[in-house]
Amino acid sequence: MGLTARLRAALREPLTWMLVLGACFFAVDRALSPPDPRRVVVDAAVRRGIELDLERRVGRAPTAREREEQVERFIDDEVRVREAERLGLARGDVIVRRRLVQKMDQILDQTSRLEAHAPPRVVSVERLTVEHVFFSSARANAESDARRALDEVVAGRDPAALGDPFPHGNRLRARTRAELATLLGPQAADELFAAPDAAWRGPIVGAAGLHLARVVERDTRDEPAPSAPDAEAARRDALLRLRARYVIEVRP
Image (cartoon, rainbow, N blue to C red; front, side, top):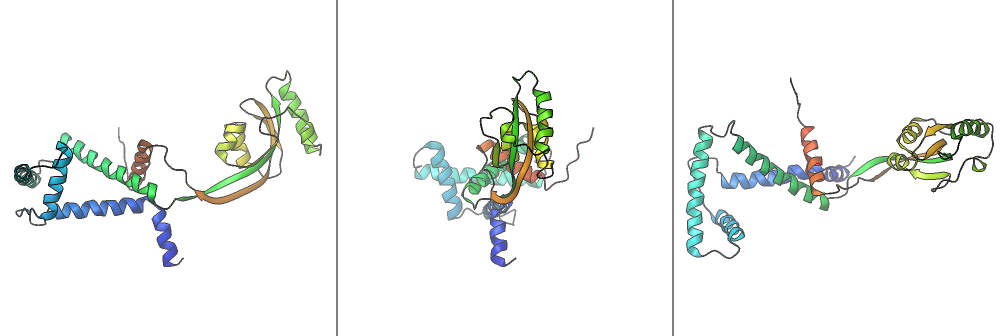
């Protein structure tokens, strides 16, 4: 795989965008917290950040006096934070832990928004084309009729001449497991994805009756991954990817 292909593959991964965003946060943090713990620098970039935060909170452009007061407050806060870190006061503190979690949630939310503009992720999706015969649960002898029909289709009888009408027809083309589970029922979907091609199976219990079914064609292709339905789901997805990077033990 060439360098360009590897780069494209990396850009499809949400973790790549998370790392980029994390690096940006780290760079800003390093800029605001120099290596020398005794040296507090308030430069133009820090001043601008303070002013933007103040403007966001008061809802207007701050006055010169308000800006200088906020700079002094920033220095006081920075000195206290550094002393607290030096003394290890943050360790084991529930409030500090909660604040760090909130900051991490902000990063995850930003990552989710970046993913919305990132190249779409691609996943491998298997689809089946399925031929089936439907026997409605309204039939008095649905199971015995289905078993008799199974013998007939195995012997070569046209399946279209058997069973009851089905709303989506007797041939379901290029359906995913989830789609088959919706149309035929979860049990039918599981059995068909595990079944050898061309072999009739049944009766299989479905949502509205019984089915005889066989796989006519099996196709696997790369498709865009489905997007997260909302911000909370996107954050949860990002958090699950973070969890995967750790060894987690839950002991009694």
